Figure 1 (spheres, rainbow, N blue to C red):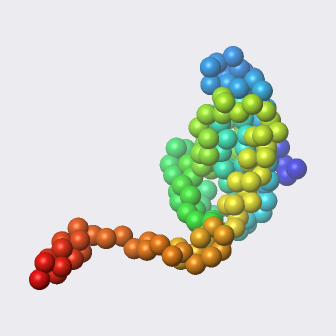
Figure 2: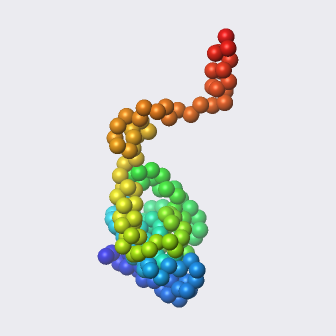
Length: 163
Protein backbone atom coordinates (compact mmCIF):
# COMPACT_ATOMS: atom_id res chain seq x y z
CA UNK A 1 0.00 0.00 0.00
CA UNK A 2 1.31 3.47 -0.90
CA UNK A 3 2.32 5.74 2.02
CA UNK A 4 -0.36 8.33 1.14
CA UNK A 5 -3.06 5.63 1.25
CA UNK A 6 -1.71 4.25 4.55
CA UNK A 7 -1.77 7.76 6.05
CA UNK A 8 -5.36 8.27 4.83
CA UNK A 9 -6.56 4.99 6.37
CA UNK A 10 -4.78 5.63 9.67
CA UNK A 11 -6.24 9.15 9.94
CA UNK A 12 -9.80 7.99 9.32
CA UNK A 13 -9.40 5.08 11.75
CA UNK A 14 -8.34 7.57 14.39
CA UNK A 15 -11.31 9.84 13.62
CA UNK A 16 -13.68 6.89 13.89
CA UNK A 17 -12.20 5.59 17.15
CA UNK A 18 -11.92 8.96 18.87
CA UNK A 19 -14.98 10.87 17.64
CA UNK A 20 -17.61 8.75 15.96
CA UNK A 21 -17.63 5.31 17.57
CA UNK A 22 -20.97 4.81 19.30
CA UNK A 23 -22.85 7.51 17.36
CA UNK A 24 -25.96 6.51 15.36
CA UNK A 25 -24.17 7.14 12.04
CA UNK A 26 -21.40 4.67 12.95
CA UNK A 27 -21.78 1.12 11.60
CA UNK A 28 -19.67 -1.09 13.89
CA UNK A 29 -19.87 -3.93 11.32
CA UNK A 30 -17.57 -1.92 9.03
CA UNK A 31 -13.99 -0.77 9.33
CA UNK A 32 -11.86 1.80 7.53
CA UNK A 33 -10.43 0.28 4.37
CA UNK A 34 -8.87 1.59 1.16
CA UNK A 35 -10.09 -0.27 -1.92
CA UNK A 36 -8.72 -0.25 -5.44
CA UNK A 37 -6.34 2.69 -5.22
CA UNK A 38 -4.70 2.96 -8.60
CA UNK A 39 -2.67 5.55 -10.48
CA UNK A 40 -4.78 7.88 -12.58
CA UNK A 41 -3.32 10.84 -14.49
CA UNK A 42 -0.47 11.28 -12.03
CA UNK A 43 -2.72 10.92 -8.96
CA UNK A 44 -4.10 7.99 -6.95
CA UNK A 45 -7.81 7.19 -7.23
CA UNK A 46 -9.70 4.74 -5.04
CA UNK A 47 -12.60 4.17 -2.67
CA UNK A 48 -12.42 4.74 1.07
CA UNK A 49 -14.82 2.68 3.16
CA UNK A 50 -15.44 3.94 6.70
CA UNK A 51 -18.08 2.95 9.26
CA UNK A 52 -19.88 6.23 8.48
CA UNK A 53 -19.44 6.82 4.70
CA UNK A 54 -18.04 5.46 1.45
CA UNK A 55 -16.32 7.98 -0.85
CA UNK A 56 -14.31 8.10 -4.02
CA UNK A 57 -10.93 9.59 -3.04
CA UNK A 58 -8.34 11.37 -5.14
CA UNK A 59 -4.85 11.65 -3.63
CA UNK A 60 -2.17 13.86 -5.14
CA UNK A 61 0.52 12.01 -6.99
CA UNK A 62 3.83 13.34 -8.19
CA UNK A 63 1.87 15.83 -10.30
CA UNK A 64 -0.14 17.55 -7.59
CA UNK A 65 -1.94 19.74 -10.13
CA UNK A 66 -5.44 20.64 -8.93
CA UNK A 67 -4.63 20.38 -5.25
CA UNK A 68 -4.45 24.09 -4.67
CA UNK A 69 -8.04 24.03 -3.40
CA UNK A 70 -8.91 25.56 -0.06
CA UNK A 71 -10.50 23.17 2.42
CA UNK A 72 -14.16 22.68 1.56
CA UNK A 73 -13.75 23.99 -2.00
CA UNK A 74 -14.75 21.70 -4.84
CA UNK A 75 -13.40 20.82 -8.25
CA UNK A 76 -14.80 18.77 -11.09
CA UNK A 77 -12.54 15.99 -12.38
CA UNK A 78 -13.26 14.18 -15.63
CA UNK A 79 -12.66 10.48 -15.09
CA UNK A 80 -12.99 7.91 -17.88
CA UNK A 81 -16.66 7.30 -16.98
CA UNK A 82 -17.62 10.98 -16.71
CA UNK A 83 -17.30 14.10 -14.61
CA UNK A 84 -17.29 13.92 -10.81
CA UNK A 85 -17.33 16.71 -8.23
CA UNK A 86 -14.63 16.35 -5.56
CA UNK A 87 -14.27 18.42 -2.40
CA UNK A 88 -11.00 19.22 -0.62
CA UNK A 89 -11.16 17.41 2.72
CA UNK A 90 -10.14 18.75 6.13
CA UNK A 91 -9.38 15.40 7.82
CA UNK A 92 -6.52 15.83 10.27
CA UNK A 93 -3.34 13.85 9.61
CA UNK A 94 -4.77 12.35 6.41
CA UNK A 95 -2.70 14.46 4.07
CA UNK A 96 -4.16 16.36 1.14
CA UNK A 97 -7.01 14.56 -0.55
CA UNK A 98 -10.24 15.21 -2.37
CA UNK A 99 -13.44 13.29 -1.87
CA UNK A 100 -16.57 12.57 -3.91
CA UNK A 101 -19.44 11.01 -1.93
CA UNK A 102 -20.71 7.60 -2.97
CA UNK A 103 -22.73 6.69 0.14
CA UNK A 104 -23.23 9.43 2.72
CA UNK A 105 -24.34 6.79 5.19
CA UNK A 106 -23.44 3.13 5.42
CA UNK A 107 -25.49 2.19 8.48
CA UNK A 108 -27.46 -0.39 6.48
CA UNK A 109 -24.42 -2.23 5.10
CA UNK A 110 -24.50 -5.68 6.74
CA UNK A 111 -20.84 -6.68 6.23
CA UNK A 112 -17.39 -5.38 5.33
CA UNK A 113 -17.27 -7.90 2.50
CA UNK A 114 -20.37 -6.41 0.87
CA UNK A 115 -18.96 -2.88 1.24
CA UNK A 116 -15.68 -4.06 -0.30
CA UNK A 117 -17.49 -5.74 -3.21
CA UNK A 118 -19.45 -2.56 -3.91
CA UNK A 119 -16.28 -0.46 -3.71
CA UNK A 120 -14.50 -2.74 -6.20
CA UNK A 121 -17.46 -2.59 -8.59
CA UNK A 122 -17.49 1.21 -8.33
CA UNK A 123 -13.78 1.39 -9.16
CA UNK A 124 -14.28 -0.91 -12.15
CA UNK A 125 -17.09 1.29 -13.47
CA UNK A 126 -15.46 4.65 -12.73
CA UNK A 127 -12.42 3.70 -14.77
CA UNK A 128 -14.44 2.49 -17.78
CA UNK A 129 -15.16 4.98 -20.55
CA UNK A 130 -18.71 6.34 -20.53
CA UNK A 131 -21.07 4.59 -22.91
CA UNK A 132 -22.22 6.51 -25.93
CA UNK A 133 -25.76 7.85 -25.56
CA UNK A 134 -26.77 5.82 -28.59
CA UNK A 135 -25.73 2.55 -26.92
CA UNK A 136 -27.57 0.55 -24.27
CA UNK A 137 -25.88 -1.13 -21.31
CA UNK A 138 -25.71 -4.35 -23.37
CA UNK A 139 -23.79 -2.56 -26.12
CA UNK A 140 -26.75 -2.61 -28.52
CA UNK A 141 -28.02 0.43 -30.40
CA UNK A 142 -30.55 2.42 -28.41
CA UNK A 143 -33.87 2.36 -30.28
CA UNK A 144 -35.49 4.98 -28.07
CA UNK A 145 -35.18 8.63 -28.98
CA UNK A 146 -33.01 10.25 -26.35
CA UNK A 147 -33.53 13.71 -27.83
CA UNK A 148 -35.39 15.96 -25.45
CA UNK A 149 -38.32 17.93 -26.78
CA UNK A 150 -38.56 21.59 -25.94
CA UNK A 151 -41.83 23.30 -25.22
CA UNK A 152 -41.44 25.26 -28.45
CA UNK A 153 -40.97 22.04 -30.48
CA UNK A 154 -44.02 20.52 -28.84
CA UNK A 155 -46.18 23.55 -29.66
CA UNK A 156 -44.83 23.63 -33.25
CA UNK A 157 -45.77 19.95 -33.71
CA UNK A 158 -49.28 20.57 -32.37
CA UNK A 159 -49.82 23.54 -34.68
CA UNK A 160 -48.49 21.68 -37.74
CA UNK A 161 -50.77 18.68 -37.08
CA UNK A 162 -53.86 20.91 -36.98
CA UNK A 163 -53.14 22.33 -40.45
